[in-house]
Image (cartoon, rainbow, N blue to C red):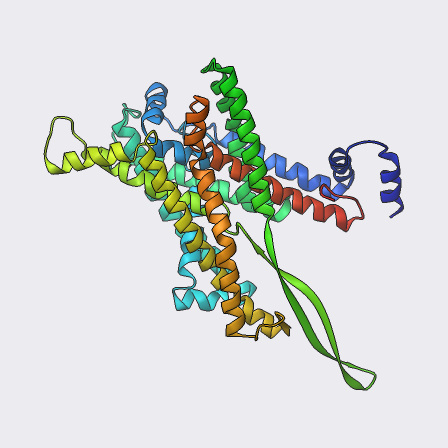
Length: 445
């Protein structure tokens, strides 16, 4: 306590953020967590530059300009897919596996029973998530190599059921699981959520190149200034909606045996329901689904044929092109739908009404049990409208920003900002808790 008071007395007029960073570095165990996290991220960036052999880099660059799906997947690989490294898949297969398990848990009775078994059940579900991530990574690696081969990126590779192809696919799957392992090490021994920090590190590593290329490719100074102001406004809105919550009042009544007789004690608190409890997951769903039909249609699109399949494939490719308005209308609709779907699925798994009743808690004016669950559902649906419309706005913002500023922004830049801000806030919140445990003032007053 004396050391903390002396440190605060010496800070003088230094800003709170800088002083909090100094306090964090001064604490040995917290400094170790920060250095360990940074070390794991450095290893991730080294792995992201280990290439798969037999790649034509010039054809690879052209393929990224033509295939929107590759740019979407490259977001989660931190630029590793653009180099076709062993970490080209990033942690995306594991994210997909986690989403599938979260959706299947309330549907399948066996998985639902495991989720209610406490820590052992959660460990078993986590193990099943890892097992499911391996075949998903294998299929995704095969699909990515197939797309790249058709783009002429692998000219000297005899792609098929052979040892060379299997080695390439196996190395990419191993790279994904290695990144997942690094992420779990960060979660266990470092600071913050490891998987999210892996994605965050990849975005941060490629972000300066994207910004620099935007300045070099455009001589529109006023447009760039307006783009910067809009970017700051979007960041402000992301922080506002990520921190927004509806506080539902909750009272607890307990019976305590004291002085030879039973006494009734009560207390009041609140149940925080977040406006944006789905995070970035709806955007991942929406962009995955909206890009997939156009990618499949590209296999059947033939300029020399005029049959029904070719015409339909050309229609799908032209309609779901990121430069067209119908593409962004579909994205907005899908993001709103998936926000409600994912939020309600996750909320039902939490069993808040049952947990409140079990612990002697109740919402004033609402009967415990089913009426409480229905009340919470109504409140959640109302506040989720704000989160769903906000995520829809974040998803379609790049199109309207590029139209307003005449600067062709990256398609997924707003999604990148959402991930970066969300992970940064979560990490700062954990660091804040660590500082407060040691009687230091944190980042947020």
